Length: 384
Image (cartoon, rainbow, N blue to C red):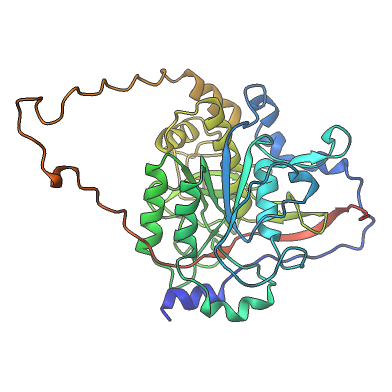
């Protein structure tokens, strides 16, 4: 087993839950505690779009498609782990469901007035299971897991219509290093037109180790801030930080139908993926590079000099990003197709080698570390 495989087996996740003894809050009070939506001015952004028509792939521990806040939003997905907890068990899809809710939660109840609402509530979620939950008893068997799950998952998502790929995971262990198969998979997704977003890492108090996939070229790496815009102490400080987003006391949905307050750059990445979905809905022709430029150009509270390892270009501003994207010049028309190949009917005939396609490189490596910790139940819905 490689050093990376050992690290991944030992660090499969950090999702922790502590249930408070306090009386449960009303379901509609959940909305009032979603401070992140107010901080990001999503109500202003929704005047333009809520993400309709956009697919966001959530590469994670799975997504509970039966959760009332996600009803009708979850597409058929893919399980690249192949063992461990199953739907209905406590260790199934907790982290992935939390991320999906931040991205595309739509609430529930009368007029969808209760529960978690995401940044892009009309976007679709494409779940791809590439890692196990921290509490999954099968973690002890992780040494036999496919090391290529993350790379394969990125490619599968890109091939199945993902406009945005959310990677709220990573390896920031002492032995973390780039994996060629993962890097190649990210580049493949970018070439297919997908925006790839990843959490910067939770190593801010433990050495600020580089985290992958956040450090791969072309990835929008997201640092975490609190409600006052300050960098969260746990948020990794590295050169690859692109922007920042809320990552402290974030309201998250859980398959147990309770709501928790969580922290982590996982949540921050999900907020950026939701924002990328809004941008792609408003301007479907935007490339991943254009989405990145729009997000950085419109970020709030920019650090001195325009960026920093702590915060990237600053806190994302979905409404301002949408305004900038809509003001971009119209997509140029495609160039006219040539009538003839290789100089026309009297020119030299193309050889077979001129049209040979090189198969994309395959990648290696395994899924990474969950980057979300949760504490504090906010509300529990009575089960029927």
